[in-house]
Image (cartoon, rainbow, N blue to C red):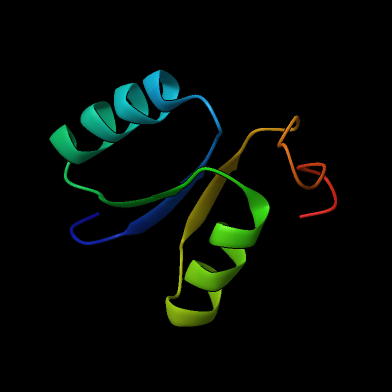
Length: 65
């Protein structure tokens, strides 16, 4: 599990902070984005093992992302 990378995409900062805290405490590397555009940029720059997506993003439906 050491070093697995997770992308969290949610426009609610409190949810992102909670998920980041829990996942980092478990040993994961966590990146976060507030919307689809920012997440697409991170995806171009990194390889993720898992992405946790909000379905109701402000700029794109999470399913489309």
